Image (cartoon, rainbow, N blue to C red):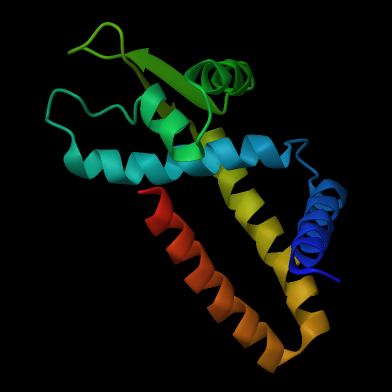
Length: 151
């Protein structure tokens, strides 16, 4: 099995685990958006001025997920209708939209992270402790290098 095949198999396993275990009806893609918004909220709250404390901008989310702004906006409309996020126009720039997780959105992220932990545990248990440690270390290094190449 090639490395690409192995990676695809792991991705497929985790996707299927997610689909079987996601009892709240949210897709992995929705979780990815919610998770990114939560992470961006933490970063934005440290950097914003006193007049702009609502949350990250739509463009920040699109950049973080490497998607087009139109795609991010479409997903945000869906998440907003489900009561998971709220959007607000910037007080400083009428063109900018800021995004914030609702309490329900934060709960969905929490549930998604728990689901992901269980799925990862199932996969890593099949490897054994030593191989799981090596995989985790290698994956961390690979992700760091990949981020450095894109920056």
